[in-house]
Image 1 (cartoon, helix red, strand yellow):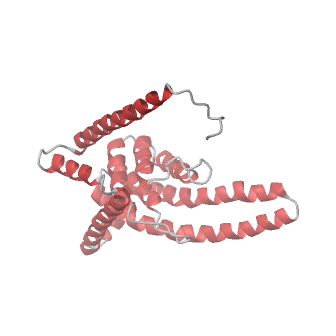
Image 2 (cartoon, rainbow, N blue to C red):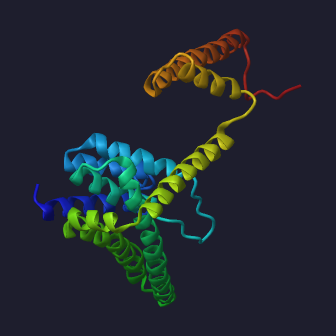
Image 3 (spheres, helix red, strand yellow):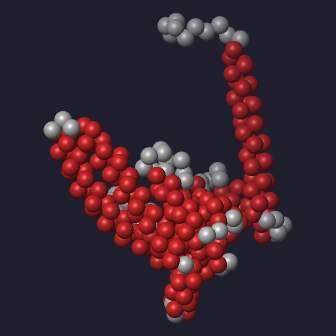
Length: 265
C-alpha cells in the first residue's frame, strides 16, 4: 500500500475514534484497543493491531481524567504505535516505546487545542447573546469538530507519512536504559490498571470467581480464551437459574386477581 494512502487511512481512523466522544454519543470507539485494531484492519494486519491495542489498553486503565486535567492521550499513542508495528513488523513491546511518548505529545496538544476551543466558547456565548444562534451552532459543531479533527489527523498523518524508517531511527537513538525504563513503567501501569479494574468489580460475592479463574489458568493450564469461554458459560447458567426463579415467583403470583388500580386497605 502506498505510504500516502496508509497515512491518510490511519489519520482518518484517528479522526473517527476522536469523533466518538464528540458527535457519535460514545460508542466506545475512542479506546486504544478499538483504535489500534481498526488501524490493523486498514493496514491488513489485524493481529498486530489487536496485540498493540490490548497492551496500550491495559496501560490506559491506570490513567484517570479528573475534572479538567488532561491525561496522556493513549488513543493517539495506540494508533501511532499500531501503525508503526503493522508497517515495520515490530513487536507490541517495541511499539509501546512509541505509544507512551506519543501519548504525552497528545496530552500537550490536547491542552493547546482545548485552550483554543475555550476561546471559541466565548465567541459562541457572544453570538447567543446577540441572537445569532446559527453562528453559535457553527462554533460548536463545525469549528470545534474541525479543530479536534486536526489535532488527531495531523500528528498521525505526519508520523506515518514521514516514514517508519524515521520512526525506527528515533527509536534506535533512544538509550537502552530509557527503553527498559519505559517497558518497566508500562508493565507497572498495566498492573495498576488491572488493580483499579478489580477494585471496581470485586466484592465478596465475586471473589470466588476470581480464584476460580486463577485456578483454571494456573493449575489446569487453560488459556485466556478457554477461561473466558468457561466464564461466559458459567454466567449464562447462573443467569438462567436466576431468571427461572424470578419467573417462578411471577407465575405463582399470577393466579391472584389483583387490580393495581384498586386502593390498598
